[in-house]
Length: 214
Image 1 (tube, rainbow, N blue to C red):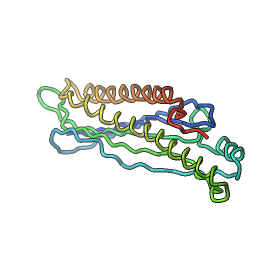
Image 2: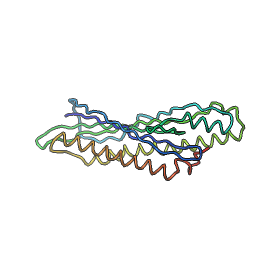
Image 3: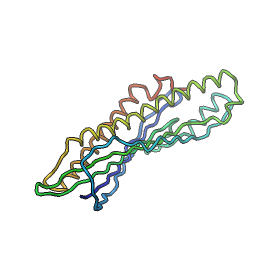
Image 4: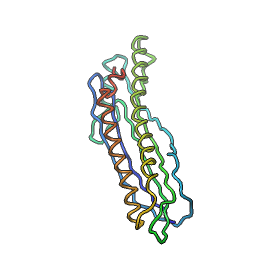
């Protein structure tokens, strides 16, 4: 039995500008195939989640105007060079096992692994501002996290959809055809869920309808 690995960095999503909305950007990168001798039995496993990593960037200021300027100039940069208040990047890696027999090439195992990175602001001067402004920041922070969690969920759904579609793949005349089919399924799902992320941002106004604005 042989084994293959394909990695796709699926999506980067920005959200929550200061009452102005933000465009989303995307990044994709494909990894090469890895072929190894192996043994195994036919299985499709649920997508393991390698974990959500949250990275904070510091923003400063003791007034609303200073805070907004700090968010505007220090937020994470997407692949188009635009800054955002928050950003999510989810990555999927699928690994498959297959063996040859008289009938061609048979899929014996398939797994998807997901990892996600979220970037959020951390206000270092929050203890130096008025209670009203602090309360507004806390509201905004909760709403921004809620919006970004929606992008995290998109990655989880994409992983589940890849598993669902590849479950119908049993064999192909050649192993090259089998691996091509599996990778085509994965790439197609990535494209569909990238579009779903775009639709999510459009529907929510990049978080504005979820109160992710300040």
